Image (cartoon, rainbow, N blue to C red):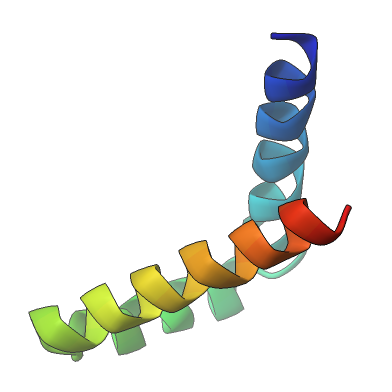
Length: 59
């Protein structure tokens, strides 16, 4: 449970970096995401999960 909470905290810190340092850039990213189709968003989500899984397995 400790490892899970540590990983969750790290994800939140990393995801908070862009809106903290560049709110205008963060808004631009979301405007681009809104233009994608559901299939494209699902593909990026799947790719992100697989890359994360590979990183976890290598660590």
